[in-house]
Length: 294
Image 1 (tube, one colour):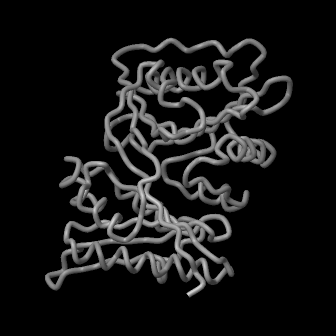
Image 2 (image 1 turned 45 degrees about the vertical axis):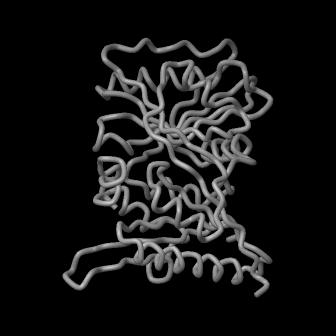
């Protein structure tokens, strides 16, 4: 993956820990859901995986190879596995999602050839910290709960995430125990990095940070930031962003990075631009819905 990403975007854009975390995702079985292609001389030349979401009505796939024939074979294998996952749960169809760099013209063409359609666009946003960053005061009436070390707080945070992200491309709510297991198994996350905002005792916003970009770029990362619909437009998201910037600056991070879906039901891209973030890379989300009646 590092070699392929370097060829496409100029740098590895992944770490060994990130790859290892993907192999222990709850629900992922390496013996059936992952595919590693090795050349006759021992070089790894391709990797693919399929990860079911929810009740397996949606399957996310990943395909990486610089060799067109290998990439095509891997895509076919992951699609076959997605069909198997959907049929095993008795679904009439399965939606298959793939994420691709916009600069990756070869894989985008391959997806189009397999009847995928580009469904949304993601921007990687970044802000650099060249000096101290002021810690913002929370909006009036907002209580900040930092860390999620008990079951009750984790349940609350998970419920806010589901309420905030419902309807967004590729988002399928995970069972709570699976969500907790996935975060707990991540080498770049700990529960101190989750923050919940409350208004009048009601949890209304959540932010989950991680260390995904620390090793490669010495940057903090906002993995998820969501505000429930009835409390949007009150400055909660801006507070959480600026609070992250201040914390990253204190930690000596060179910047803060996050990804935003430009087709988000909220005007998220404008929000991130308004706090000084700039886009550094563009991705696309592609989808194919496959009938399973044959």
